[in-house]
Length: 241
Ligand code: CTP
Ligand code: MG
Image 1 (cartoon, rainbow, N blue to C red):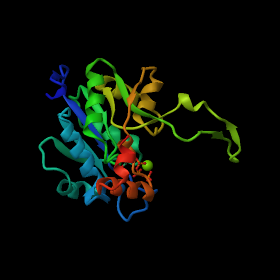
Image 2 (cartoon, rainbow, N blue to C red):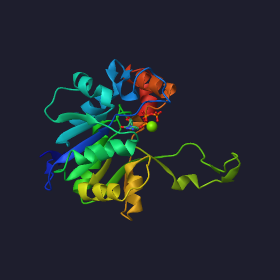
Image 3 (cartoon, protein in one colour):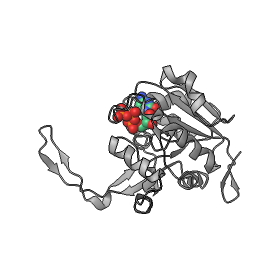
């Protein structure tokens, strides 16, 4: 069992990280599934798994990848008995569900996108510590910089929600195993994040301060930004805080 936060140990059982890495990366448009695209010379999924290992709060890591990459994924991941590769699914929720099935003994889950390759281990530690403190659902959140508007099918603005009440949500998202299993058991439709399914159960989802470096690499511009951060360019100071 791992140390959660300055010597506090998980008392309930294994902390299992689920790393969805089975997406196609359509928006990035590389010639391979996104999680396997290198950033600073390492595939995104490797960086994400290294971050989880470095956090010291995770007992096991399950990585969900496209079926054709299950064989080869081991060679790009850190060598560790704690890391296992399994086949993902068509939608992100299908990939997470595959991880849930493969970890029947988990007490906590940390669901962490491979595409958030630069996530600082310190953020992972903070999410885990909130779980250990008794919260059943914990997500990192950052303030929204742009004004957000709702639009109708024709693109005409229908409203402007108060930005001060909006947050962009990152990963890792932490849940007690019971809560995440219940959310997936009742899930009929795909969701873009796991907390969205937990909210539908009526369970309170706690937000903690996210980190700009936990941004999701989605587009070619995001990839260039991640490369610049890893290269230690002048951007680092701007992006870090
Ligand atoms: N993911 C997954 N299984 C899927 C779809 C997505 O495991 N069927 C993973 C991705 O690999 C990624 C994370 O979920 O690490 C977040 O998804 P996203 O950023 O949308 O990645 P892709 O689906 O690969 O990108 P796109 O939507 O542009 O195709
Ligand atoms: Mg996607």
